[in-house]
Length: 178
Image (cartoon, rainbow, N blue to C red):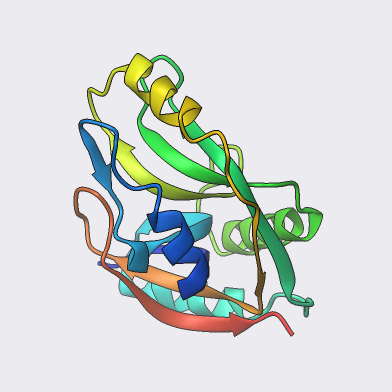
């Protein structure tokens, strides 16, 4: 039973720049740079037949142009109980449209709707029982974040194993944006 999600790959030079933010936060489980990605739609654990339907449905999307994506700062999920540190992306209407289209296509084949609001980001670390004060200090001491911009010319269908900390991720299919 595969665990699937769609995403945008992070180019090696951007991953290298993001990897410089690793460390300095006690209790954080840092994601390996080769596993950095920008999740578009988490699909979850599904059977092989539904996986085939997902593969086909994503192939029915409308043609798009490559996306320019800018990563412009650090943030956290979880508020008073932080659960992740991530690199955020600045507003991108085309990226939101791509995600919304995937949501629509996947719901048409019977997948339940995504319950979380789409927040485009690259997870850098997963947190468990990490002090919110430590997280705030970590973010505050990394206030100078250079804008990192790249062009995505495809999105991919990833599979992963059920694991703690994420990865390794395998590209099952690629869908060009041009």
